[in-house]
Length: 485
Ligand code: BG6
Image 1 (tube, rainbow, N blue to C red):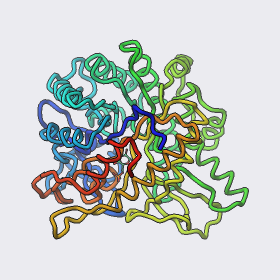
Image 2: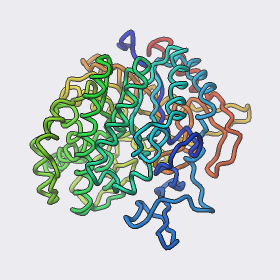
Image 3: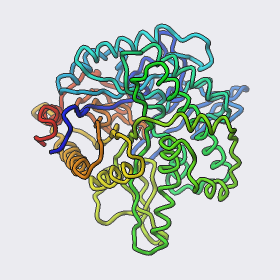
């Protein structure tokens, strides 16, 4: 195996999916607090209220409504796995596995409850300081996502999900506060989780996005690119040792057939959001094909010369991404559609699919790594990868998750091949190293962890933590620096 000596083995989480404690110590509401649970094939919905008292739920909050916690609804993220009160116990378990890195995110509304306060919420800052100190106690390096899907609800309502450039400065203030506060405690940062998912999301389940949706999505992305680039500059000024990365939802995509029309369609899939975002964040400017995308969907971007300057001077230090699956595309309409995470595509006959119809494809990870390293030549990290599965406690009281071990093993082997082929891969944080609330469905039963958490899809359970078989396996992997799989 070719893993470098200081390779960052670890695990990854997001605040909204683990912390719980949604209404304590001055925290404001986040969008994820008003998001209900879904099911295997059903998406989650946000609940809202109009001024006249009428309530409703849907995939977005109408512009004349406010997000609301409605009686009788179950909101899994509000308590999640209560990491807020279990962080010491959980970090101890991560340390037992030998983690070198722990990826987590900061709940924006814990620091700025509505996003617009002048001064941060001290209790929120204190919480993360304690978490970082606890991690350092065990020599675990934090990798911090500044924004992971849980914008303050008040901000989202007022500015309609990044529909206004004012949010750029609110984000910059938030990021600056974190860089200053945690200088010396945190060296690795990611500006936005899966920034390209805004565009991917629009196509979920084969949805044909309208020009209006494209306008919103590309404009939102533009404001986020500028916000990210500003954060990179601020982060470097505050501490030149800061390593700041982009984070892309990395779904490798293939043409289903050798039909040249499929080859072209596939190339355009890469361009639609993966290259689009990576190019701006890594190269500091929009690629040529961006104009084609904007023209095709009649997008009129609000972009200034100052924005372009900020993008140019705020390129990231590393390329990080999540990887769970690949997808295939075709112009031949008779092919079966499979709707995975945020992707839609044709069923690839060479791959197996998880219970959630995610294509298991370790070669796709090698392909992705080599392709992106070739394009950007930046240090890389895989900051999410894993298998969501239903775990059962066996008669012996244990969880024998050999399917998870198999999945991770094959992906680690793929990483090794990519490193041998020259990719500068620095870290690997598996997703949901401790069971957490699924982002896609809100299920607890879709589990990724090495550590089981006793909580079910209705919110029942003791929150007790238990080691799965994969816990000992991962400890061996880390100890042997990837030699023993
Ligand atoms: C990524 C997200 O898309 O996939 C995570 O960054 C998410 O937040 C993960 O949890 C797995 O998806 P899901 O829907 O199984 O939780």
